[in-house]
Image 1 (tube, rainbow, N blue to C red):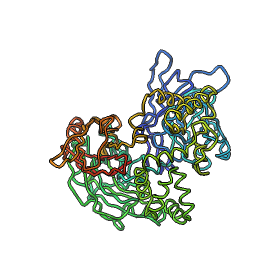
Image 2 (tube, one colour; image 1 turned 90 degrees about the horizontal axis):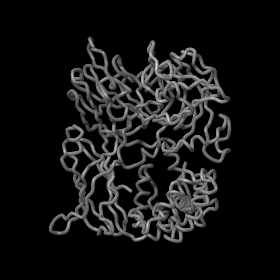
Image 3 (cartoon, rainbow, N blue to C red; image 1 turned 60 degrees about the vertical axis):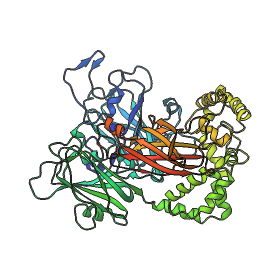
Image 4 (cartoon, helix red, strand yellow; image 1 turned 180 degrees about the vertical axis):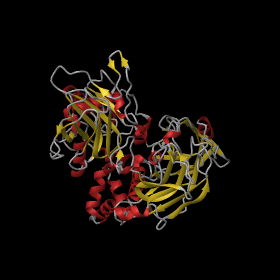
Length: 626
């Protein structure tokens, strides 16, 4: 139940993958003469304004193209804020009575959010039943064949089966006309990598697959608003119940995106000043192995629920933080508003438990022979030293432990091992595998670079010439993530890099072996990078702490190099000091720690130390990153 418009009961379990609040965006339209394409994703039902006209015609709350006088049809491309499996598409033509399209069709694909529109437009289309690998690269897949739609109607279009993960959709209208709203309904499929890192993850967040399973009341505002990112603009963007006139309390049940162990919960009553609850109680439930009917029976019952947070007071217009008292994994969280009222957002930070598929994959890894393990690890990183370290670290207790071991193994590599890894990569645009590549890594490289073959010949020639010049100047292959990028873009990068007279600071550690220290600050209360925080790096020198570097976090929350350019951090004990008070004060948020200090030690064997800070107004955590 995660949507911005009422949907039919059979689709009530779905999430609106195209919510504007999660970052969905209309990237392109062939024509929007009468009404803007952005209206398609506006929250709420379409509006009618009697007698309202613009200098182009009747004002319409939707997307409308002009009357087509040539063959063809119009279409829009939408980037989904929460990629996932599509179960239905709502093509709402409300108020478009004499100007709706005759029919529509829908296509989808899964590519990075930053993929340029030009590349999306150039990709071919394959039919729904075609072999996904037959095209040899990314392609639009037809998910809903051309179907008739009715004017002034909420047209629900359902694919034959739920689709594979989709990040973009293309709505084609035949031949032209207007559509008021577009809703792409389905199940969120987040990138699993976000669950495999060392940091806690908001397991309830809508972008991580969290949904509302049940609620006692949602008269003034739906509980799904609790799971949205950031803060809304007003009280109406929270969960609010009617005034209870009977004993008891209001509650909602959140199905977590992944089964996990909850460590900390934040409950925000922002905007709720005269109608915040008096108190809350938060419980957890693990329904692994139970059928849908059995799970549903437990949502309103007392049996099976265990306390995550005991009853505690709430105050108006405030973000509350609670530490969980339950160390066992749960699949659902039930939050009570005692006795009733409204809350704005909920965050349930914790560690995801491996899925059955992930455990099966780990088991298959552990069952490999020693020789096959080494080959697999060399496919991931061409350095033999990396493969040997990973093999010796087995067995892994979880996927998270696997990634932690990979981070340690990679950061322990010296310059010779890094150059060994580079040798396993083919030059960009070259079809021939690198001599040191394994069969698996050669296949991955070919797939990643598939888009380069479609580039113009002059761009591919620039790549070939640039690769040769780069190798001659620096002694190793030029590396860049080619997935979804064209030859022209990569040639521009390569030529820009060649213009440098010396290696950039980020690459100097590879060729010169200098130790580097960096940091990255994430504001977990907002789910966003923390920009503008002053950071000081100090080293303990026997008689006290000495400053060796400083910086201010950029728009991505990072300070990429705390050691002055050209200098090396000597092994020893270091301390990072983050001035967090001014950051929260500027946002008007009360906080507990004026300064956060992190002390750690470095060793000569490790060329890089990355120390992230996960920050909230009343707590923080850190770990050794990569």
